[in-house]
Image 1 (cartoon, rainbow, N blue to C red):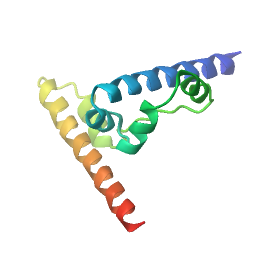
Image 2 (cartoon, helix red, strand yellow):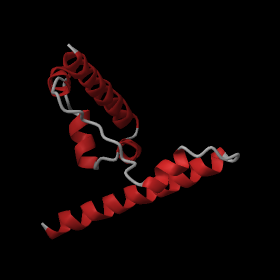
Image 3 (tube, rainbow, N blue to C red):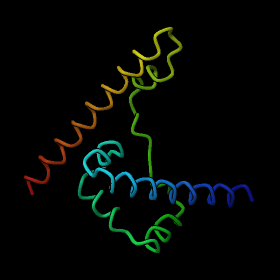
Length: 114
């Protein structure tokens, strides 16, 4: 029973993520790709999904989205209890943006090599 509830929550999260991703992509594809941490090619594929395709994909048992903050420094900044929380948040945003740029440049290098 507990595992079935967990699977239902994963499916609901997947569907919410896909619907949000589609909305963001339709508003501004480049910004959405950056915010979602995906390539523009993947953004284009997500934007083209029909409702039935999105429902089918979301119904899987694997969570589609993932934490992009795999850096302990970023987590420490985000969970900081200092007086100047806005500075910590800005610093965390800068670190995450630089990581996104690293991933994008790695993707470009790989695609040119192919």
